[in-house]
Image (cartoon, rainbow, N blue to C red):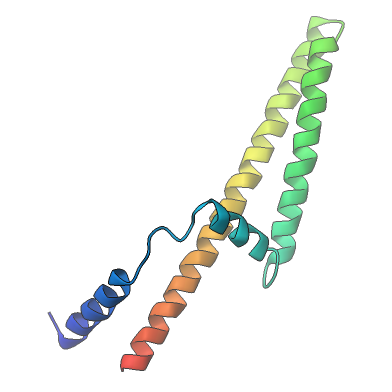
Length: 120
C-alpha cells in the first residue's frame, strides 16, 4: 500500500467514526426531495413530478372507466390504458430517484475531493 492509500484510509476511518447513522431517514428523504427542486436540472425534476401527478390522475380515471364500461372491448381498452399509464408513472419515479442518487453521489465525491485536496 502506498502512503497515499494509507493516509486516505486513515482519513476515511476518522469520518466513519464520527458518522451518526443513515443520513437518509424519512425526514432526510423528504428534505432531499424538496432540495432537488432547486439548482441545476431542477426543471426536469419538476416536470417529472408533474408527469407523475398527471399519469396518476389518468390512471385513476382509466381504472374507473374500466369498471363502468359497457362492453368487454372498452373494458380491455381502458385496462390496457391503465397499465400503460401506470408503467409511465413508475418509469418517472425511478428516473427521479436515480437523479436523487446521482446528486448524493456527486456531493460525496466533491466532499472526498476536498478532503484529499486539504491533506495534499
